[in-house]
Image 1 (cartoon, rainbow, N blue to C red):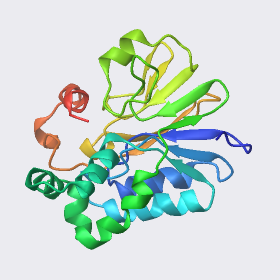
Image 2 (spheres, rainbow, N blue to C red; image 1 turned 120 degrees about the horizontal axis):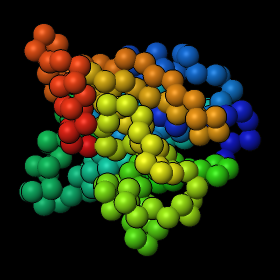
Image 3 (cartoon, one colour; image 1 turned 180 degrees about the vertical axis):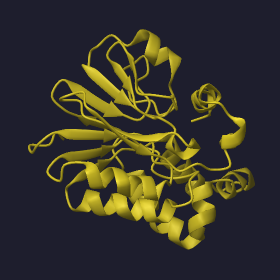
Length: 224
């Protein structure tokens, strides 16, 4: 699915940070292709605005939206028939913000989101690959420690870091926008990085009580 125009910008986990998303899109070249690395939804305050914004970019041909573990969890929750499954659905922020009817309108679209975007010498996926080389939406250390370079550079989100992190041929670009960090776009052709300030939520330490080092540690330890 590689784009034939311009460069690519792989964008880390948006998590409902619509204002940050608008700022980031506004400074990226109009002719370059955007690849959203999954987890556009959940956590932040602007989920509905984000999914409509990103889907509009997808339908116009300017962007690709990859599936993340949060999109996967929502789809599985919508398919659940057990009481436990429905309780899990009620715990998902996207479902609470959109309501049942609107969330179900998105079910088919989310279930068809691709898992991988392939470029020239690089791929983007949400978290990494398992031992069989299949995309794994929840993997961390097993992939980081064993990746053999078969796909070239792999650009992933999923695990919040205080800054863009290179681990061999793996580039980790989730910089915790929803936790008060940054929303990151990474160009695999040039290794350029563009970032905008994210949207702090009540998941972050209060600014008057956290040193920069403490905020970095908090972002790095946040769940995916």
